[in-house]
Image (cartoon, rainbow, N blue to C red):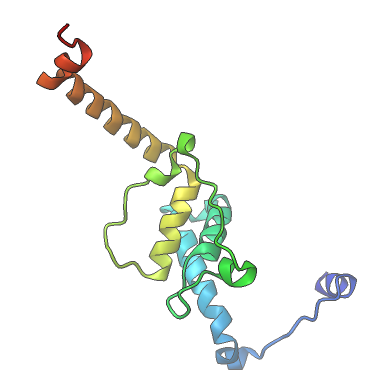
Length: 150
């Protein structure tokens, strides 16, 4: 099957020796980060990795690399990507990371979670907004705002 696809699409498949995997170390390093991000974004349900794959791959492509300070997307296209975040979908409201300094895997996982628009994240946000509204309505200043003195 690989030979047929290679000939049809003119792809030169390069094979490396399994005894010299260090020769392909740069590529394999990126695979490790993606694999770990897939596992983390599945949250214990590794058999459902395929549901997280699109968001993990997108997040990996738009995440800045320490060595270059650029994302692979920017290096390939010369512009920053437009994120598919939308205010109505509330994807940007994922709880912030617990640490200020994230390794590449953690950053990819965080961005993948943003893209997944998880129901539990949106439900938690909704609860916080409702609590905030209730606090505002019961505050002493709320009465003067809702019913100003004429």
